[in-house]
Amino acid sequence: MITTKQLSFGYKKGHPVFSGLDLSLPQGSIVGLLGRNGEGKTTLLKNLYGQLFSKQGEIDVLGFTPRERKVSFLQQVYLLPEEIQVPQITIRRYFDLYAPFYPNYDEAIACELIETFSLGWKMNLGKVSQGQKKKALIAFALSLRVPLVLLDEPTNGLDIPSKGEFRRAVARHLSEEQTVIISTHQVRDLEQLIDRIVILERGTIYCNESIADLSERLYFGPISLDEEAQALYTEPSLGGTVGILPLEGEALSDTFSMELFFNAVVSRGQELLTHLHSASETTK
Image (tube, helix red, strand yellow):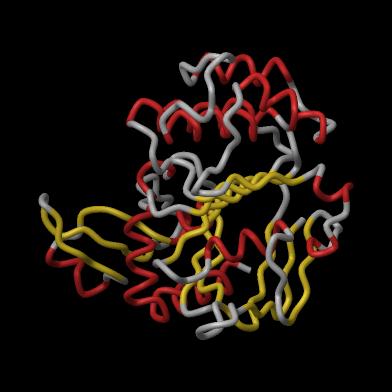
């Protein structure tokens, strides 16, 4: 589905964003792309889309090399950027102009989502709020039915009800064959939606794990004083100490916290990843 090998990229000024980056993602997953500011999340999405060109390495997306920008590739992938620039035309006109480039576009889904997001076809994109623009483009992205959807900070600018509507729209209209990669800092907004986590740290893929696998190996939640010595990571909270513990035997965690896991990887990544690797080898 998506594979990068020894991918390197840097802008003309400054240090390389990433170097020797290897990534493999399966079809039919909702991927949360996490990382601190400046780690290259947007840059990676643009490389996968063919909007930026890597200096070295290989990228395979849906069997295509993105930088070649073939029409047959562009018909199967859509990138929604964080900062939206749209012409001063109605939502209806926008859909009529751009939807024909995508052969799987579904007008019924578009109509449903325009209503769900409390928009109107006659609204002028040049005269509505940034949040309304984003909702219109989210509706467009999901109605295209492309195999790969790339979303860069999609919940930024959305109010609380709209964030819930976004999660429900993705869950309702995404097919098993489609893959969505969501770059985000808003981990709590998307925690119940994402089924795989990719973390960029120090120019490399620090973690590429499914939520199901993590839930089989780790406990997330309140940590007692007696458990702190065994904890892989802890942090204070208003309700006391919370953290991550290794799970033993046939136990299964239903308390996964994407925020806790991200904080743990960033602060104590090597120790946590060593445990995950050991646990994975044990179950083989």
